[in-house]
Length: 184
Image (cartoon, rainbow, N blue to C red):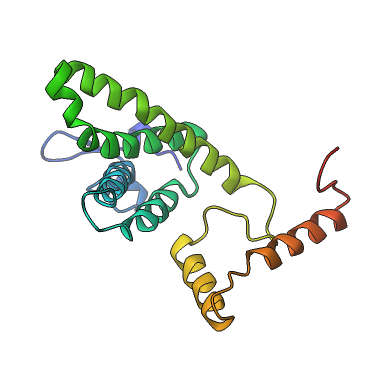
């Protein structure tokens, strides 16, 4: 809802504030700034999961955090948040390169390699929009909840992950929609 300029109010510190007349609460911190910090944090968690540290269990947490950040975003924002996660991962991972060639090539290499994370962000947003509601193929939703459900199901079946059953169910659903499962 846009507030006409005649209804806007000037705050004491000189900011233009349309929230006073519209009744909406004023946001102190932007949602994108928090998402950006969380995506960089996801890259940092992924960095912490690599050797020589023994925190390998942080890798799925990092991916779940990144996919949660990407939920409901545009493709451009998906690239940006994925790229930020890539920088959060590669900048601390590759400082040894700077010892041989200097800081500029090290940061350039990290920036170029972070592009792959940006592509992941775009693909994750695109898959999140895909029309597979009954297949369980949505990347977003709740990645940690999905992982817990899969783990609980695997433990109850003696360590067998039920992904095969989900794949069969997805193929049946696609066939029922008149789609070809494996195009020839």
